[in-house]
Length: 275
Ligand SMILES: Nc1ncnc2c1ncn2[C@@H]1O[C@H](COP(=O)(O)OP(=O)(O)OP(=O)(O)O)[C@@H](O)[C@H]1O
Ligand SMILES: [Mg+2]
Image 1 (tube, rainbow, N blue to C red):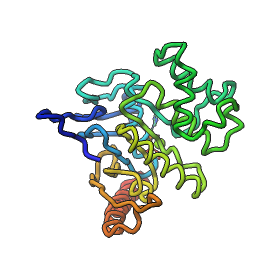
Image 2: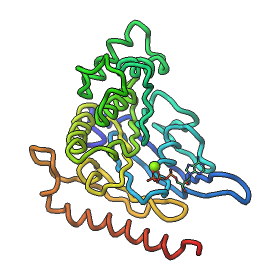
Image 3: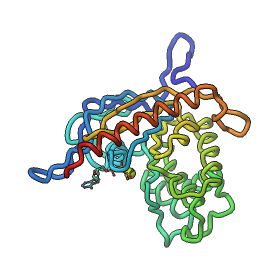
Image 4: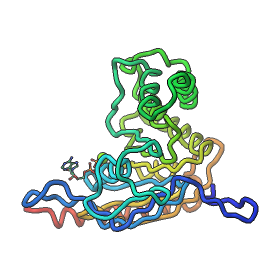
């Protein structure tokens, strides 16, 4: 998928472009200040499927929260389509690392609530929630309570909720981390199909190098202290009929480049750890 397409003489850029300029983030203040991110300078064209990999604690979730607008970066700025991000907004939807569905509401009720919060007209919420739930394969489970769902179904519901209001950017924080291998593979294929169908920008955090290589159009390795971009790789792997990219001739090389960057970061963190 290209990020630009020709429309007459005008080059139309896809929506959902992100720009990070000298972004830093520090938790705490004074003696307890903990700088976790920065500097981050990055341009993400609209429609990109960006995978962020990196060791636990390197700041991946923090970076997603900054894009979501839950907190401002302590320094620098993040823009979406040229607008500075200062708060959460309907142009971004988030799937969290921990499930955050409301157990007292039905599957449909969870998505309807997200539509309400995004200002969706009351009389259209039900139909739109049902459309989104069908899109993620939950058409048969709309009336169930979310605690009755399997882990994979809960993540589908969370994805439908994040898609409420048709955001340009979908932020996903290790959404498949707790799933068994087979379910995870199915969910990856479904997410790839969703991305192809919608053309949304996806920022996807994962621990898994293989997951990044099966899903991403680009992978960045985050690491160091504070966390910054150690490696930035474009990905353009060929997928077979099953959606698999393993047979691509560049797979092994890309995999080892990413793994090396993560290994180097790990060795450095062990050397630099306070004794
Ligand atoms: N709300 C917070 N207040 C203070 N420190 C925080 C907060 N959230 C995260 N941190 C610290 O910031 C650093 C980065 O955390 P973050 O959750 O972004 O890492 P991560 O890369 O997502 O890790 P994981 O892979 O384990 O999810 C960690 O050292 C963490 O302890
Ligand atoms: Mg995290």
